[in-house]
Length: 339
Image (tube, rainbow, N blue to C red; front, side, top):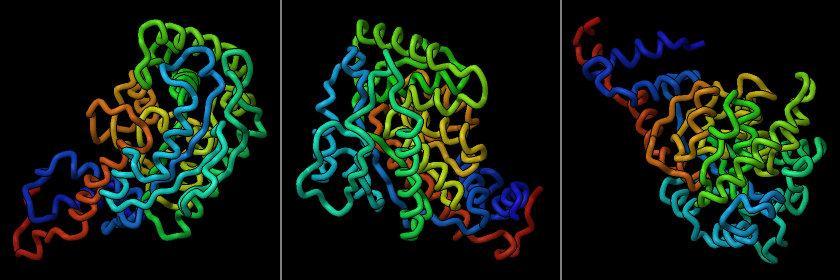
């Protein structure tokens, strides 16, 4: 086993002033610890996008109608979405999985699309559980299967993204439930909510979390199912399986981090395989990251989702891996290291 002190000794022995690359070296150390090698790999890599609709949208928590989910699914399939373009730019393969979109899928989708619908969107979490425990398990298993397939195809770095109008409401609920923060702190504007919509969203999140809050540890899974989205449950299963199978997980924004909270609660230790790509503009994201004890690489005010923040961070982990693998050591140059 490679220890953290051994990794830092290697970094300090490279042909550069000690710690002169700042946080790039810290990220390199994290990457080496996850992969347990001083020559980590960042290619091949895959982004899996999970899509699903949310019944709570009918309550006015979003400025956008649910139909936008299927419109964006079509845009991703056409290769014209932000996630599609950034994945291509950064040499990252892409998969799109429909786990709960209300509209019927494209009649002739491309090979990177998988139809694995659990239901036509979740139920309205403001009045009843968003899904049954059985549906949660089904969505979780879809994500787990996708991680296993990605690793089976040789991918060493996995990214997860989502598409689902209304999913920041579920995300705020899960963050309040699992990250020891208040519903008010967990709720943000999402995809552009105005003040009235924000107040509605805060009230719904507060009431839903209070209703779902478990009385004991055995009830946590049911509470999560009551608040989650199918795409969030699938991402959680994806993260848990990816960590279990040895992949490096590059974590996207607020919704993906809610899925990470779920994965860590249900499979403790999953977070040890994660690198947080960025801190979202959503206020609850900081609380979720702090709970997971993850320090994000970027803080650029991004809040799109779709895995875009993780995609933008890919060149940073490429740089960290190259530093570890390819920079000459001081001993090769015949120079003694200064301690």
